[in-house]
Figure 1 (cartoon, one colour):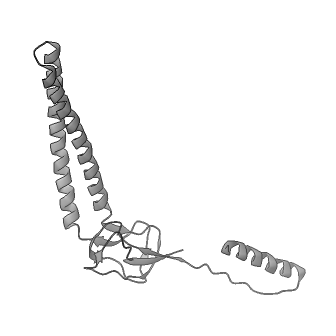
Figure 2 (spheres, rainbow, N blue to C red; figure 1 turned 60 degrees about the horizontal axis):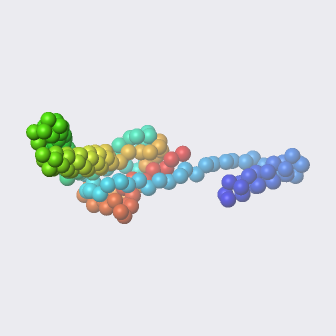
Figure 3 (spheres, rainbow, N blue to C red; figure 1 turned 120 degrees about the horizontal axis):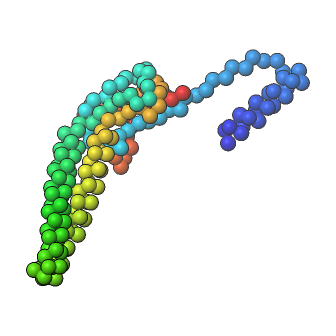
Length: 178
């Protein structure tokens, strides 16, 4: 709507100038878009690295969360993933061995079925562990607030010790992007 209004005004002014009905010096200034930035994960702000008036490049670190809990969750998820891989590999091997024994008439169908169920459960646990490790890695990566574009810091409402809740956006840094 605003773009159409500006185009209409610009055309009207241009028509007056062409017709000789208006003589003016036109000064155009663009208003920077203000962006309130916050974290995508919950946590406690450890440090705000910018102050009002700072020029920031795209990708510049603006603030960081305390990563103690997030990093601990990531380590736990990685350990769970490693364990799930070992259990999966052992269950797969055991199922394969019992299948061979069954084919050689040295194992019962019940033993093979139990091994298959164990293997299928181990595969599901591995997939779950991979997903949880990926989420923890994503969370850890989002504990650093970076500038999405180049701009100038206009406000810093965030502070060290501020509790961030991902479900309630709270700007930590506000930048004006040209």
